[in-house]
Amino acid sequence: MTEEAFEPTFPMVERTIHLSLTKSFMLRNRVQARDRRGAIIVEAAVVLPVLLIMMLGIWEVGRIIQLQQVISNSAREGARLAAAGKLNGTDVTTSMVQQAVRDYLTTSGFASAAVSGAVITITPISASWTEPSQAAPLDLFRVSVQIPSGPAFESLRWSFLGRLTPVTQITGQAVWRSLNNSEVTINTALPY
Image (cartoon, rainbow, N blue to C red; front, top):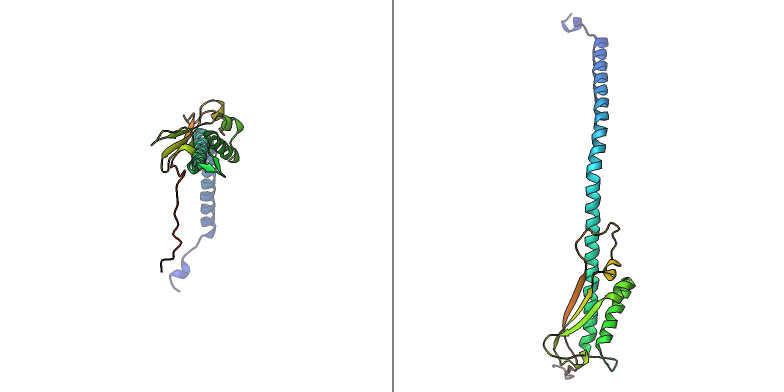
């Protein structure tokens, strides 16, 4: 017989040692898990308010960017009308441009307090005129739209926590050239 055949094995002893090690490991993990649960609650209590304020701040900044874009677009819409000088044979006036801007803001979903409180100005840059229909071709002018602080601006806020950002008013503007009385000549002769 070989030496291997006489080697004694003790499966019962190995199993007992393995079970006792497993039990002690599991008990130790339960105690650590109970201690860890308390740490998780404390960490969540510290991190969640900071995370919530950051999330609401990002939300409010995104809203302000959206409002800025709509106000700039409304100024462009007013400038487009003013640049024409005439609308269906009628001279374009400052009040028509202001109404076009207000209509754009209303269509975009702005509150009525913001629309009625909007300050809309048309300023000639390269010439002196009072109405857009009096502008010469290629005169530069600026249409500015401002939602001032107060009830007009507050009606646009989403945040229920007060002010997370220091912004209290929004302004948008468009600089445009007048196309009033511009003559366009079309050559009807074909080039060949």
